[in-house]
Length: 254
Image 1 (cartoon, one colour):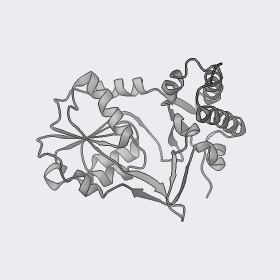
Image 2 (tube, rainbow, N blue to C red):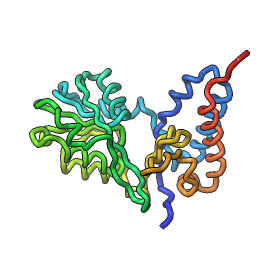
Image 3 (spheres, one colour):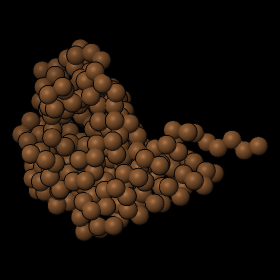
C-alpha cells in the first residue's frame, strides 16, 4: 500500500528559529518564506505547530514538584526538558539517553542506540519521582522501549511528558505510566493524522536508515506527494533549494 494522505498533517516548526540565526542572509530568508507560504496553502489540512504554544499548553495542565530524576530521550527530549524547566523548575537533573528509529533493509523499523537502553539507564539514582521527556509520541515505540528499560524500582514512579502526540498512541502509553502532552491529535495514525518536523523537510537525518546515509523528507518523493498532493513538486523544489543554501553556509562578502 502507498503512503496515505492524512486528513490532518501537523508540521512542528523547529526551523524558523534556525533560519532567524541567518538574519543577514537574504537568500535564506526568502527561501524560508517560500517554504512556509507553501505549508500554509491548505490551512484546514496542514497545521503548523509552534514550540512556544506546545510548551505553554503542556505547562498549563498542572503544576508538579521538581522531579527527583529526569530522563530525556535524545537531543530533542533534552531540549524540551530544558525549555520546560526554565519556566517551571520541574526538571532540575536531566539524564539523557540516546535512541532513534531506523528503517531496515525490508522497509520496516527498528530502534538503534549507541549502547543498550538498560545500560544507559542503569545508573539512574533511586529517586522518589521520575520524569521521562520526549518531544513527540508518534507510534509510541521509542517511549515504550524506554519505559520497559527503566530499572524496576523506578518504573512505577515514572511520569511521561511530551510536546505533541497522536492521541491513540498516547492512550497506549498511559496504560504504562501517567502522561502529559502539550497537544494530542485525535484520529488514526497516518490515515487521519501525521506529524513531521519542518527541519526534517530540509535537513538530512529525518529519515535514518540502517547501514545507509540518512535522508531529508524532500528526498522521499512518495511521502511528499502524499503530504502535499498536487503541489508536492513545488514543496520539494523549495525544500531542495533551502537545503542547498543551508549546506552552502553563509555568504562570504568581499
